[in-house]
Image (cartoon, rainbow, N blue to C red; front, side, top):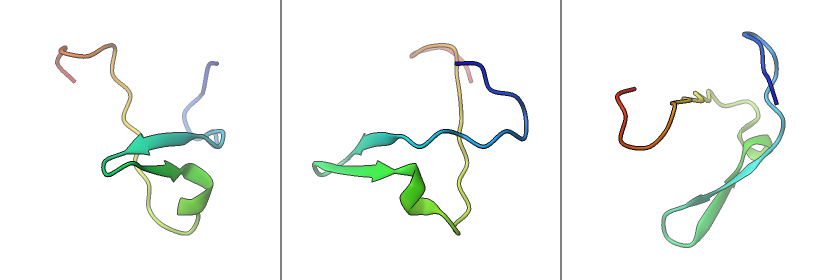
Length: 44
């Protein structure tokens, strides 16, 4: 999926530490920063 600057991100869920998960839609109303990088172990 290609996203453009300023476009709203689709809702998604990620695993977090402590056997928890975080869903983007649960963060509505709070500042959120999404960081994309090419792959693990590369400079960001």
